[in-house]
Amino acid sequence: MGVAGGACLAAPGEARITRRGDVVGRLTGAAVIAEVLAQHGVGCVFGIPGAKENELWDEFKERNIPYLLTAHEFGAACMADGYARATGKPGVLCVVPGPGVTNALTGLGEALLDSTPMVAIVGDVSNAPNARPFQVHSLDTVALLKPVTKCVTLVADVHELPEAIQRAFAVAVSGEPGPVAVVVPFNLLFDVGSFRVNPPTVPAVPFDSTAFDKAAALLADPHARIGIYAGLGCMNACAGLAAVAELLQAPVATSVSGKGVIPECFPLAVGWGFGPHATTTAEHAFAQVNTLLAIGVKFSEVSTGFYGNPNITRVIHVDANAANLGKVIRTDVCVHSDAELFLAKLLERCKLLQRPSNPKLLQQIAGWKCDSEKLAARAGCQAHGLDPLAVVLALRKALADDAVLCTDVSLSEHLAAEHYTVKRPRTYLNPVDNQSMGWSLPAAIGAQRAYPTRTVAALIGDGCLLMSMVELSTAARAKLPVKVFLLDDQAYRYMQELQNAAYHRTTATLLAKLDYRSLAHGFGVAYSEVTRLDQLDCAIAGALLHDGPVLVRIQADYGDRKIRWIEAVRKKFTRELNVQQKARFLARATSRAVQLRARND
Image (cartoon, rainbow, N blue to C red; front, side, top):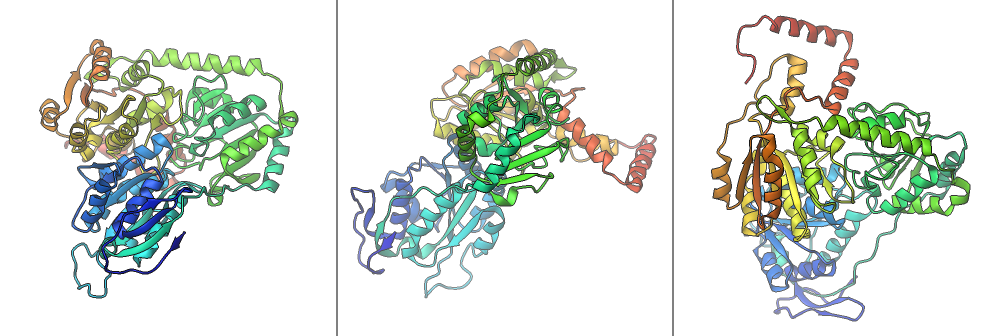
């Protein structure tokens, strides 16, 4: 990538595209940013313009870069995240400094911890020689962004812009994906330079051949009973993963983020996780495993049920980020490799690794799945509303295989992880490792912006909806037909579940009873509600047929619904308390059993 000439005060000209794809011309900083975005085929820029970036947004319009105005910068970050997860391409957001940045930090943090590729173009105060002190939005933008991104580049000169944007896209998708920020001082958007911007290049992928050979030798051991644990890193390698599973006759479990890397109706697929927090099928299947092949997965707290996976005799860990390898569990072989390349290399050794068909294992998996489905099918109504598991099952029955479901940070996320059968990649999206409440509605809007003709739904609790409800107005204004299914029980039920077990009372968990019909109409979206089980299927069908956004309020009651993740985490947490801590909890529980004051609020 080269820059011809220097900055000047002359009016910029138009860019031209050479035969090999170079962008050539005299351009302002704002124009060259837009041209680089066009080179990368950016499908949408999410955000809110402001005084520090109006010049850039005007160039988006001038150069036909698609954009979507959001109601809040948290929504912009989550929309870019949802767009990226649904497409596999970097999501792009553009925000102003100061409150624009601080509002977006939570969504960027979710993308960082969940390994989502994003590019954030962030405005900044002027760095011109005549810039005055105490400019509006004079927070330390770079310092704010560093903890929630893979890297931050502060551009000092207009000629640095093309390389900074190109590098951001490359870093966002290389190794373990994540968000990257480019900070652009206000004056650079107006400065002019002569540019020759090369087409984007494809980043190299890692592959440790020595470690691969060691892993292949363990997998070739005839006494190895292999199980595969696959994460989001396998999302671009679905066919290879299924082929390797058949080659090794290995059951395949996934992390939460990895749901979809293999069709969960595949004969060797056993659902998510492989411990007491996971699907019963996965727990049963992995009880027989003595060799674990973990690919593209980090063993994070949420996906392991508070680090509750059972120990397995031999472990092979494969990941594109060397820093993730062997961090949580004892590992025999660490392979720094791209998942798709690792799986392809295994298939090249099919003669060495091929195992005979194991009909007994397939029969067992089918039986465990059938038992789980029969038990789940009993879900219906509780005393004050519908069992959320019944809603999860009804959505799975009604949604097409290519429909995208976004879940949120509520108890229902664990029910969906266990019981919502995912049949295609990038169709199940969940905020996992930052647990950002309110994520699912804007993420669903981002996914819908990527796929206007596909069904996109959000399953969200009332506490989470309060965090991002304003983005209903974005869906209505942009005519994006997102279907929002609201589980309304007027409480932070997740916190109640955790607090009751530990403290025998709840604190700060009760929510207001809201008129969601009026709210929906005020935001300009269609509305329906469900208070009885016999209304559920009809309400879902009606929402899916409507050609615009819909809010469906479902009166929910978890009642005595047991959730495997919660039960497993509670037991694991209790086991890890020391003697003094256990005594303190017991004494507190005993004293509160006789207290007369109000126990819950």
